[in-house]
Image 1: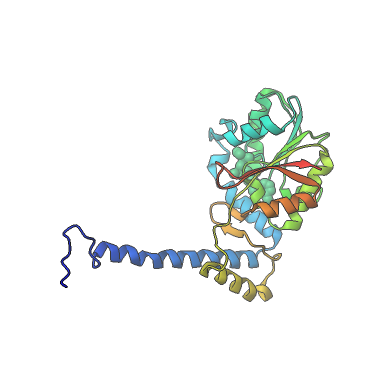
Image 2: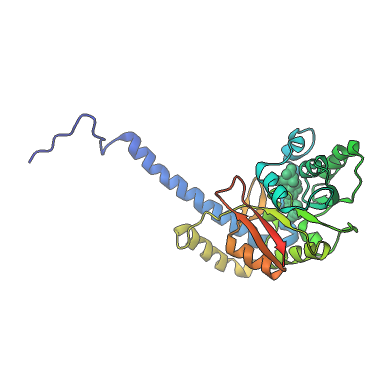
Length: 282
Ligand SMILES: C[S@@+](CC[C@H](N)C(=O)[O-])C[C@H]1O[C@@H](n2cnc3c(N)ncnc32)[C@H](O)[C@@H]1O
């Protein structure tokens, strides 16, 4: 039987098809490169260097501070929902870790909340936050600090805390289960009844058993002897625009919250505009 090609049938010799098909090698090479970069960066940096690197990357991000209008933009929709549903009513006292130049702080003040305290590791953001808050006359402890430092107890006296709004995406920069549990315990110590709203990166895009995840496992094992930093966990990574990050999954969030005395009252990952969770003491 003779085969006659229909004029509109796709040609198996399509040049475009061949070229586009070949680009999968570019994708694979880039995927492998990001895995190597993650693992070398994680192995070569101590916890303090990771945190300083992330801070240095943010300090160059004009969007969050300086003359940007972004800090005056108010809540994202998910923050509005979470605050309305889970936070006590104004004038409750809210702690704002990772406040940047004050976007959440300014919106909370507009809604009649008091700020128990706020911090961010980028000194310029903290100065910008102070300048933006000044016209409101609100006074509260505002300091340069990290979640890691907060977990170690290095923060000024903040008084009672009724709710905690951890700054947008910043929970993702707290690497290591034990460090996150210490952070949550420190929050619980200040606000034994306070709901804690967190936002983060999720989910980790790597499929278990895929070539990328096998490469990662090999590298992690190979770099063990050279490692100066704390051990990495599944989901730890480095992103050039955001620094060291952890991609969460729900099971991990629930387990770490429980270890710190919280239950997860709300969790939305990649279906949400921005992955976030709310923890409730007890
Ligand atoms: C996406 S920005 C959000 C800033 C601000 N909350 C907002 O929404 O405009 C993330 C913030 O996390 C801060 N950050 C980075 N690493 C941190 C760490 N280890 N501890 C606390 N904050 C951190 C950055 O300086 C930055 O201000």
